[in-house]
Amino acid sequence: MSSSSRARRFRVAPLLASLLLAGPAVAKDPRPIEFEVTVVHVSSRKGGVEATARARRVDRIIGPQLKYDSLRVLDFRRRQVPLNQIGSVTLPSGRHFRFRPMDLSDEGVLVAVDVERSAQGDFRIPRRKPFVFGGQRFQDGQLVILLEPDY
Amino acid sequence: MSARDGRSERLHAYHDGELRGVARWRFERRLARDPAAREELLALAEMGRLLREAQAEGPAPDLWEAIRLRLPALDAKRAELEEAPGALRSRLRSLSPWVGAGVAAAGLALAIGIEWGDAPVSGSVRWIDSRGEPLMVLQDDSKATIIWVIEREPGDLSGRRGRVLI
Image 1 (cartoon, chains in turn red, green):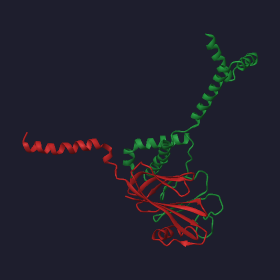
Image 2 (cartoon, rainbow over the protein chains, first blue to last red):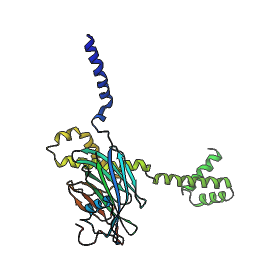
Image 3 (tube, rainbow over the protein chains, first blue to last red):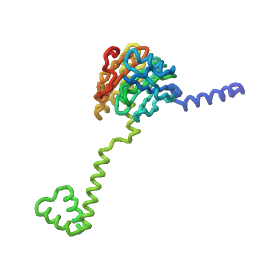
């Protein structure tokens, strides 16, 4: 065996070993998916939309569908969640908002969502598309949760 | 059988409601004058209570959450694949173990009483369950998906006229 072919073999062997050891993980993207979770309170009490860029953006998303007289952002979180792990945010109401990315495809990320003592479901959410879940009573109005994946 | 074994057997029979008539009356008279037997009877009752509680409890919450969040997603993924059978036939073939798992998961979920909604496959919504509360999908297009659960209490905004699309 020539020294050059032996050297090539030594270069290839670790690569093959790493591929074999990695197995199916190579096919799945191990990078966590970043989720932005925005929690908003809307009510019929006069107050308008909070004067922040985030509140105005939420207003542009939900305003055409819902009528309210005040909107304010209560919480904003970023969560890095790998596939098949559970991300969780505690809502101001004390309930938990949980989500679990299950699958990533060209159409978006399939997310299982569970709002404690409310609804649960599966949603295929494209990148940066707002997924809005609302209706939970809180104080004099209702909570609205926005979930936006980025990957 | 020793006298002690006999007493223990009658104690269990009494606890289980199997002693009748004179045998029950005689055993209750004995219980009245035997503190050790009364203690043993109390211990039996406590053990039964603990067993019933243990049987009533579900799986550990974290584990259950993980399973519950996973089950419908498998079915949703299968539904997506079935939506475009021609284009995805090869993927179906490669995913056949997962499809099988999805069917098994669906069967398991039905067995344990999870409700399955009528999931539209277009848009983002694959499956949704509002646990009996009225629910509206106000929007589900390329711009946003808006889900609204109507908690039937005063102050609900979703029933107001004008902007809510039903």
